Image (tube, rainbow, N blue to C red):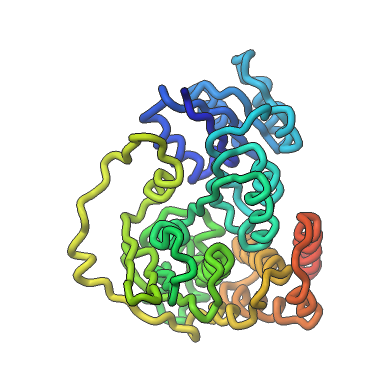
Amino acid sequence: MKKKIAILGSTGSIGKSLLKIISSDKRNIEIFLLTANKNYNELLNQTKQFKVKNVIINNENSYNKFKKYNKNKKLKIYRNFDSFKKIFTTKVDYTMSSIIGINGLKPTMDIIKFTKKIAIANKEAIICAWNLIYAEIKKYNTEFVPVDSEHFSIWYGIKNQHSNIDQIFITASGGPLLKISQKKFNKLSIKQIIKHPNWSMGKKISVDSSTMMNKVFEVIEAKKLFNVNYKNISIIVHPKSYIHAIIKFNDGIIKLIAHETTMEIPIFNTFKFGRMNIKNTKKINFKILNNLNFKKIDNKKFPLVNLIKKLPLKDSLFETVLVSANDEYVNQYLKSKISYTELLTKLRNFVSKKEFYKYKLIEPNKITDILTLNKYVRSKINSKF
């Protein structure tokens, strides 16, 4: 029997990588649902190639254009994620949640009850609402696996040994600014800032990589996913991005999880069914393994990593403040409204305001708590521009 799968955000890099993997085994897999926001052309091509049964298009203009150009009368087209109840009569075997940003939170939550397994690449959902997501996963007996290369590597390495973890090291390439003096940061163009040495990523996540804010978020994710205290999680610089996580256990065993710098490997391993094999993997790179070159992160050069010290020990709404503020200031930087160093200072100053301290004491009780606070933080920042 064919495995039924759904992909939330199929036109993004994660969605397209998964479809590339699936294309090698179309006979055994049925694409039950794909979703997109604006890229109706890419979505249209995907529905033709994979004989998709259902699509959701959030953007009204793209929805109308898709309906106009679609020739498949059997394809069911829906306008928004409230259509899940109409689409699913039984659980699908696997769902990839890869919608970017806070907009991916609600559909991620809503689809859990309709899937046997969910792979989550939407880090905002985990950072802001893990307690709510975890409750849904337990309620509906849905299997969960993280997709980020670092968290997938930790998950792969611990295999039910959560209680035996002594220390987790999350690796960071150092991004495009590793070898550049801090004094030169403002002299770099946006194009230079987003040029990652190892990974091909979108503009926003590339900026986060340059500021190391992505590693702050990854530490938060690791703490929530694996129930480990912040004091037991460290960031370590590894320029080659070959080792993705190091786990030291209480019994003295140390595991280093390595793979090539491609997201296809963690994506494939969250997805594989039966005897599926990933194709064209390279041989072990002993040249890199013989020169791993691990270094401590420079907290002065990358000051945003110090925000980890401000994080509450329990799940709280403060994580939403952090995510929302970072999103807005990065957006302002990409629009050339603020300089790179202003991005760093404004973000730190904003999340340190007294009015946001109270949110460290409040646990999210429902999605609307997060969405309302996200909207407030963004509007407060935008009112200054």
